[in-house]
Length: 151
Image 1 (cartoon, rainbow, N blue to C red):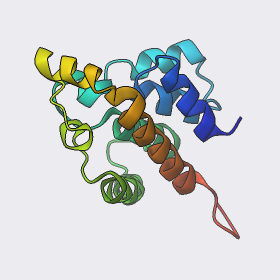
Image 2 (spheres, rainbow, N blue to C red):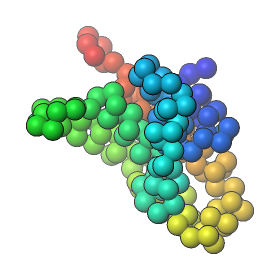
Image 3 (cartoon, helix red, strand yellow):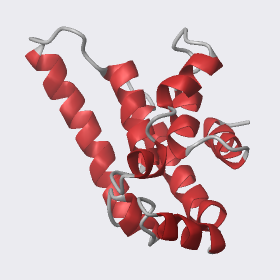
Image 4 (tube, helix red, strand yellow):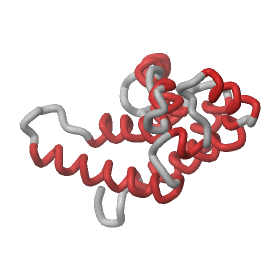
């Protein structure tokens, strides 16, 4: 199973969009699956129902942070490098999905009970969100893919 397929499978099996992206693309991190799922569990559904950024994008950014990030607060070069790669991801995500905001992508305000009920009736998770997860996983896979002649 490819990482994109595994990511979609995890999402369809009940993981949040953030959990699906983060847990799949950090398998070689040394963290066990339970820990990876826990770390990402507070972010899905428009950053936990606040009508914020899409959880799939947040999961992909968490992956970039873990794999490409810096740990020294004064690492200016590391910060710049991460800003470049995360900017590439965010721009491509916006181009593909039209926005970074959950509500604008799925058409429902998940910060309200009514919005969540309407989204559930419209089967947004299985009709729209799964495609956002798939598309984001494909973008992330492309960004993480080593280039010819180097990393």
